Length: 306
Image (cartoon, rainbow, N blue to C red):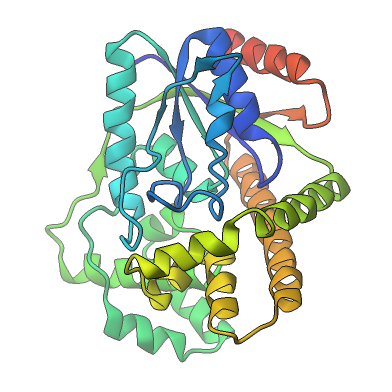
């Protein structure tokens, strides 16, 4: 098993730019750890920034981008299998694999090597759990087995409900066994961006995207058969764009509401990364405002030393 370099960071931190420049230096290929960039035709809203994968005329190979049609509901179990397949493909070429993304859940799923694959959703139980108050939901979560609680943290109500559903399934299916994978030898570099700089970059980027095709992209997806329900399933940009197209909100409300939502999302990303550190993941942080050449050398140094 070759060494895996992981580059993570919150939205608008410049992690993709860093990963691409590092990949060029190391003759590496990038595996995306983004839950929405897997969809074709969803480019602006997901922030694919495909142009960043070409540096001075040289293209950086990437995986797990544009692999599913818009409207599909990709899940973390599929991601784990796709990630392992991409990893094997890169290793077969004796190239360096770089995992890059801002989804802490997907990054952990890739690095941990085990999951609750094969456990189906339980919509009836899920709906029952949604009627519980926060205290009662948390109390129910605490009754889950130690194994489930160690694998699924209670960071959000959705995670608690998923843990309870999984625990219920495991208790009623004693024959079930978690799927395990070969251990990965990895190191993690995180892009640390100052909160005010991050907020400024998020707002400017959102303004640019709204004025350069993001609304039109959502309208095109709807014309191609993606429903408003499917669009809203993808959250953040597409949820707010759907509401705007349905004339539920004004363009001013779209910008202000989405801007706030992305700031909150970015904050949750950093909370997740800090929790990863508390749980034993060593993240080597590089400052986002450093020159790209310096960030690249710091990341490569970490990779070569671990």
